[in-house]
Image 1 (cartoon, rainbow, N blue to C red):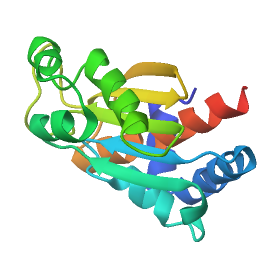
Image 2 (image 1 turned 90 degrees about the vertical axis):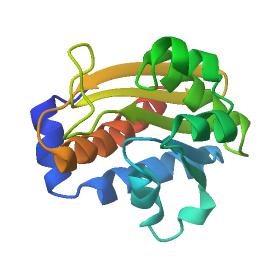
Image 3 (image 1 turned 180 degrees about the vertical axis):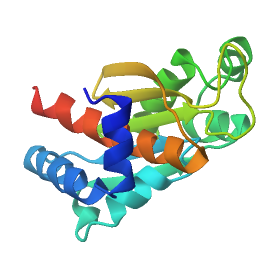
Length: 173
């Protein structure tokens, strides 16, 4: 896995095109579709994917679920789960990733929920806190990261990490 400094360096160079091409090749090879469920990135992962010509061969859809209501209505994340753990939490990221697969024709998903800033952070969940969920079939992985920088940097690092992690997971088998 990449370190935060490496992710920031990659993100500021707009490396998404290279990793998206690699991810697209893996998804095409397997005949799989990708869906995204994004909160703090507001569709930036879907945009990075669809910037690649021919993405309609492997990118199924993107859900921008910025509000808690959208997470519940579009992805089926239980409102009680959000109330219990907060929108920026492991259980919500896991439910978002699973919901993106359930509510699409995709076999694979990326989900992100976080606090990009500059406001909204707390002692327990400071600005830069992001929970990730990746779902492939019936397997879901989650991970927490804490990114440094301003809103733009946090969101760029989130996009880069989400794409790299999924590519690496799919490549590992």
